[in-house]
Length: 498
Image (cartoon, rainbow, N blue to C red; front, side):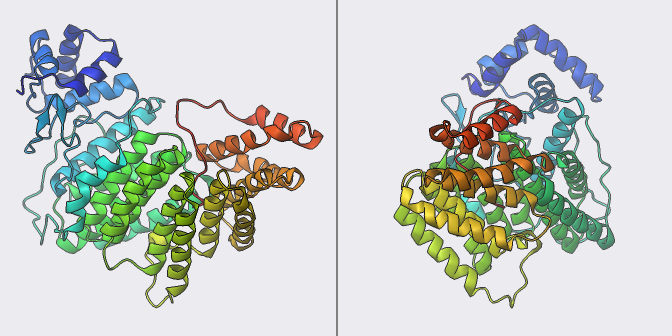
């Protein structure tokens, strides 16, 4: 007990509308349903949790996390409630934790968090609820928590077969997975499933397959709860990292921003546990893209510093080029034209220096020359809001991206069309802009990406000065007719071309 209020728990408790007595009774009922009928919580104990900072013993934190998740319609973790996990001490100062999520996590904690978080995410999916209302962690907070850990050498929790000593992870009563050993053929199948999900996401967006990816990740979390032989455990962590990145990207794609960020952080941890620091850096770069999309480029730059420095010397030039393009986009969002151009120049040099003698990892195979130009188009189009002279370069790169896009990359092509249309509007060429805007509008029905609607709304904003043109007036009416109403806050000045 700290003697100080648990502000995290108090804030979430205030959102529920419950009384302390109601919460106590629900804890007892939920605990019994989860296999703990002996638990007897009362109003005074709930008061001590909230007002005095008392940390309840297991399984109460997990029971509370499940109750708050159900009530608020978004994933609420033990850390969100201001509690440290069993075996982890988190220092609290003035009612707040120095590191509320207790990062970095041990491999055992990560397996537990992965299973818990995906299980509650699936529970919300089944009930048709939508995650919302949580705050994103600041880029500086994530960087501070993870910097030293990411720069150190990873070590696996298991160094060999321990088939008679499984690491049992008790779940909070949802989607229980029986921990058991797996073989290389099963992991082969899991790795192939990642490729299928990745191709679908690139083609159609994340909305339709998000639940399937989260479910697959939940099963992998169960596998990781069993200490597999080291070579299999390492591959499983790689699968977990890839699925977590996809789950995060798909969550971001449909507007579940706090959920997306949590998956990106889980992915970075999983990649590092598997000994793949470049993958950990790429996962953090996704969190940075998310920040730029939400209008927080300064947070994005904090994350990109960690992503670039933490990726390690094994990072291939093409991967480093990709990281540079994200940094450039954040700089463009802040109007830092000179820095952006320098960063993009470095990205081009890195890209062409990759002679292909080392095959790119599976998670980098989507970043090709078309994506390089797509990200450059996005950066210059974003800078054009500050420097109209950047329009010509935005158009050039968008045109090249469209020429180079392979089949099956509908979402990326759509982004290219929007970048081109927006650049034309800024460059006072409404006729050409309308043509590209209509191409984007006609292909919107082929994706389930909320990010594309954010980009389209931003383009719609640029049409206002040409509203007296009959062609643009018709376009605006078409957009108004089909655009869904924007729910919640957050603005987007663009989004990733990947």
